Image (cartoon, rainbow, N blue to C red; front, side, top):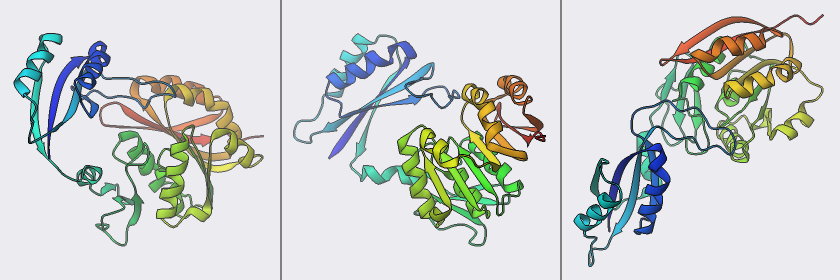
Length: 301
């Protein structure tokens, strides 16, 4: 069987109409992609942010006995969506549920880590290799904020220490800390799928016995009245600022922290909020304007 793909590039406000239009014409699925390489922050719960320009792609089954008349289909679409770029292509059948795996390769993070998709062999067997299922949840090492956190963990002494991974996503940061010798990692995320992904990736790396992961309310009950030696949080500037007093209670006196998911324009505001509780020692930037803020908990008298 062959498949027909129709790609239509539209403005953000036209996305919903274009999706509905393609589905009404028999598309078996519709996907959205960035048309202009625009950075997009991880959405908050309930949010579905989109790029300014979006490629909306409809996929259609092509019956060899009764193929779709592509010219007629495109003519109808252009009548509904005049003056927008549009193109089509035909694809041969393949094992779609595994095709995405071809696009992943091991990622090196400084001298310390390799992020290795679970179906591939590590390039350096003696390195600290984090096996990962990239399809489970946000956080594969590809994103600049995840990279910055891994880089920081690689330079931080976590051996025999208690570490918090707040907003754990795929669990990549907590797993990395455990592979570096952390005594225990306490991880949490608002997304139940992230909790599951973190457990699965910890098991994949043989460190599940030293990991606790749960939703925030479960984490709060489990962690009380402990304090961590190290905290890493890769989320967003808004939640990070709201969480500053809570993080201050979670980290020991002179305990270390790293925050990511912050763009350069937000660094001053985040640092100002955290300076009430923490000494800011370093700001690191990667890929245009993604930043990591790190430092230590102020001495608690």
